[in-house]
Amino acid sequence: MSVADLRADDLKKLPLRAIVAFGARCARRVEHLAQPPEGHPEAARWTSAIARALQLAEDFARGRADPGTDPDTAVQEVEACWDLARGELPRENAYAAVVRATHAAAAAFHATRLRGEPEHRRLLSSGPPLDPAHHVADVTTDLAALGAFTAAVDAADAISTTDGLTSGAAADFRRLLDLKLGNYPEPGRPIDPSSDGPLGPLGS
Image (cartoon, rainbow, N blue to C red):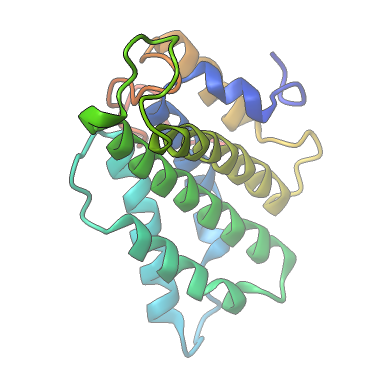
């Protein structure tokens, strides 16, 4: 699969932790571009929001059941600083990648918690949900995949990649498939998305 051929639905070949790891690594590649300019009056809040947002995504990918940052709080904080990043296109796109990766992680956390409740489990894997809340889990899981894919596209836009994704993102996707971490829409096995993990250095 080439960079240009990858689509959002392709991420549904991966379990949730792998999907979030994919989005987190895309955002990490352009994290330096998302940072505030030197001397910005809101620099501390801005950089803290980015750090907490990406930590949330990496916590989920690593299988941390109780993240250090509340998912909804992380989303609120990173969205609250979004307007600060506007004005320079590479920074806007890089910051958008961080926001989308955070959305993916928060959606994945919520979907996993919903599916973990006994009353939301299916009688059979192919059967209908026991109650409407399971539909919410299904939709939220889809939002996680869409968020991670959009993070990849925004990251590519931040560095003016014309193929729609970076080569690093495409390589990550192939490695994640090869690792066979589980099946969508389940959480799957934990994975370290950092350069020290099985996906290797972030690259470009």
